[in-house]
Amino acid sequence: MNPAPVDDSAIAKALAHHAAHEADYLEELKKLVRIPSVSFEGFDKAQVRKSGEATCALMRAKGLQNVQLLEMPGAHPYAYGEWKNAPGRPTLLLYAHHDVQPAGETEKWRIPNPFEPVEIDGRLFGRGAADDKAGILVHIAAIDSWLKAHGALPVNVKMIIEGEEEAGSGSLPAFLKKHREMLQADAIVLTDTSNFETGLPSITTALRGIVTVQVEVKALRQPVHSGMWGGPVPDPTMALAKILARLCRDDGSIDLPGIYDKVRPLTEDEKQSIAALPTSDELFRKQAGMLPGLKLLGGRAPWEMNWRQPSIAVNAIQASSRKDARNIICESAWARVGIRTVPDMDVKEVAQKLTAALKKDPPFGVQVEVTPEGDGGWWYTKGDAPAFRAARKALKDGYGKEPVSIGCGGSIPFVEPFSRELGGAPALLIGVEDPYSNAHSENESLHLGDFAKAARSAIRFYAELVRAG
Ligand code: BES
Ligand code: MN
Ligand code: MN
Image (cartoon, rainbow, N blue to C red):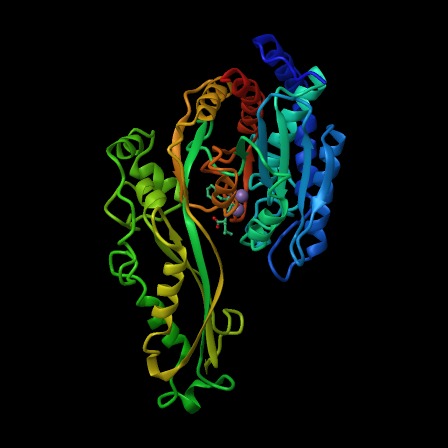
């Protein structure tokens, strides 16, 4: 079979197919959103399998070959499909994930059911509509448009759609070992990040890593009456509060010995590139939903803080519950704590420092148990490989705007080990979310204009990559 031609008129033909079928791609996205594929422990695993199968069915229907679920023992399945009929042309590994975060509190959503997507004011609301089922459909729309318009793609593709990204990608190292042959590629394209602003195409060149632990403080065999026993009996929740408070200085910085020692300073170019981005402290505050009076921490540009400095967060605390709040001393208290890491921090070292600090000098002699939840490494690229030039051209034409390079405060555990496995193959992180997507929160949504622009850019990218030689 001959690969698709890559001249302007060939691209236009593929784009025309996309334009005529935008409604179909949106419908297919809605179908995926209707499957509540939450990958967290305690949710129905069958739904994640179902979304993997639905992703496979979509790949098959669009003409991908060798489509299958890739399984690791005890893990949610990856969906895989490929099209390798363009000999002599580059091979792209296309990544997205089909699992989603839990929906949070249903009452906080402006739609009745987070898994029944609704279009409001040019956005599609629903859990996973943006993160990351839109990513799946961007790849699918690009592939389908080329195959329908030309019966062929300009490049070879291997599409890999993860099922455990939101749960920390625990089986990734084993998966990589098992499938390294099959997944060889010249470049990786990930659609799982955000644009810097709606309509502003953005290439992400840095991701933070993450270390997460659970800490449990135990004091009593059972909760007791706080009047009858309070005084001589220590409160484990107070002990937990003291332990957590030790992790953070008054200025918000992390109070672990040596934690900042390996943080790589920004180059002059990197500083300038952040300073040149179209934003302000006010806009940042607004996008993050910060209330009046709340301080911006760090004394650096907010996006420099978010992309290139470590940060700490207490994700959840539990000791009794608001609903059951009554006059007791709890028997135990629990929290989940995460630290985001940046170049050149060592994830294992951070985990060890965090654990040591949590266990150090337990207040009142409480018992402290720390359980690590897994971790993922940071990733960084200069973004100067030829594939990046092709991506910038494709984005510029696809969005009608000059793209920007940005970092990302979030993590995608897949990226670092995979690009390393592929011998440092360029990883192009080109997302479809925007600052108003509310990923992980209630009212997640996808901007439908950017959904179309992202697909148009992907269509162009395949051709530009070939043209770049
Ligand atoms: N798509 C996000 C990563 C991301 C975050 C992109 C922020 C752009 C902006 C991804 O699905 C995600 O949420 N990753 C997790 C990884 C964790 C579970 C190891 C994260 O960052 O919390
Ligand atoms: Mn994601
Ligand atoms: Mn996510």
